Length: 173
Length: 190
Image 1 (cartoon, rainbow over the protein chains, first blue to last red):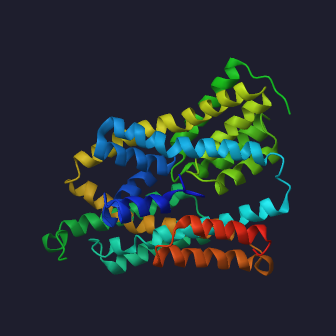
Image 2: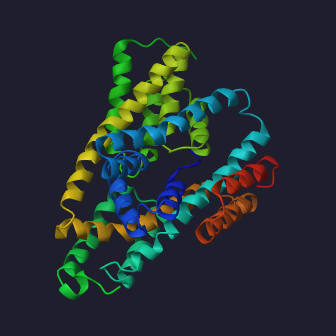
Image 3: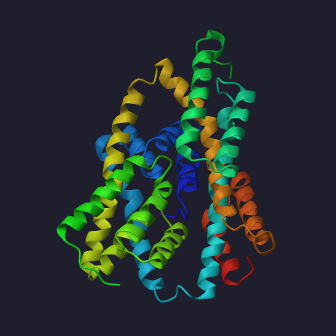
């Protein structure tokens, strides 16, 4: 597996762009489910998608697949690097890859933006909600355990209301 | 560092990770501070340096972030003996962190998919979408902002920004980007 520093960006590219198993909207929804459930979210996503398309065996295969190779890789690295952890070049390389990995995660979020266009909550509300979430989590560093219920409930109520209005529930393409 | 762990200790290790599994909303990384408190502070199964370097390595290596948990178990096992206990430690930690949450998610996702026509399920999914976008961008931000000294770290931020734009706007292969990042870092430019 080639997902450095978290695999989300890679998964998004493979499943949505290359294999076309999912649309961006579906990906965003499934990611939301994987995110709000406890546990490692990429494993949750593999589990949900594996189950959706291939049943129980798919769920187990996807989970094992996403974990086993990287696990071997990591143990090998840890064993090899045990002697080199003080080496400035190795530390620098880790630092550089970490910076790129941070960019990958941020970009995978930005690439989901088009999925919001047909959201029933409307663009202004979506933008406000996204900005509020970013400020709370990235700038104020509030615990997710507080942010998710408050903003989620607020947005959920609004979405529920909007879905009740027939002309909005099936928005024009 | 060498320890001897009893069966009860292994069970305690499993129990700790299993309970963290259900608390770790938003990814296993969110449980890292609690893990540190338990493994390093309370039980003294790992040294502080072992925890920190293991965490950094797992963040930089390929694969899901949750694998740092495997490395923690591995290191506890190494401290407790050798290769065989390291494998045991790794398995115990991974099973503990994965089993409870995957069972719950599996059930919940099936339920949600079966009732996807329900207004509440649809409202939930629509409501979460913008939050998820923001959370991902925020994660990138937090990882990058861990380097907080502008004088020294502006090049790291620039690299993150460039990587973000390239991944967002182009289809350049991700391995090239990571390789470039590793090279720049090894040469001491970032």
